[in-house]
Image (tube, rainbow, N blue to C red; front, side, top):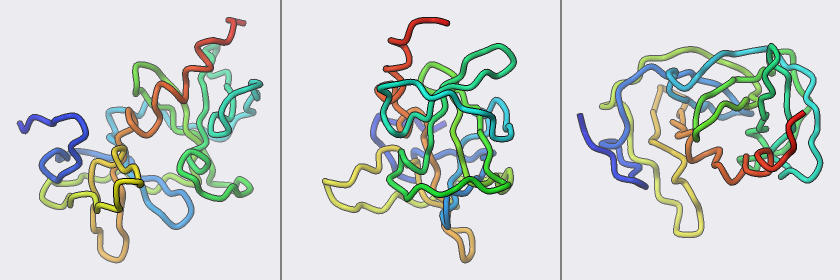
Length: 165
């Protein structure tokens, strides 16, 4: 197995595996299915004051309070009204569980390392460390997301400071 160095985003660092593919707008993203705890419909989200805009708030998932991140906002996309396919993917990453709001879940796909290309370089001012690589899937390109980097502990840190209910 290839050892991955921190910050490495080459196809050598990306792994063959099973990924959950989801969409935000016209872009397809994929996250390792081993990180996915469950996929749920959109629940009422309780807003918590003074959180970053990308942190929508918290949900009560069977008695457990889970922070919810809006990936559209986190990735700098325009906000849209939720559609009937909007859902929350509950993930395990960055040392905890959290939900991410996505426009739609597309499929579970097996992706071979040979099909994963290096993340294009967009210049020093553009941070793409959260990308494991890019999969050219016919007419669509899929971006492989490292959720440990895409949703950092810094984004969730304000929730740790909130008093327990």
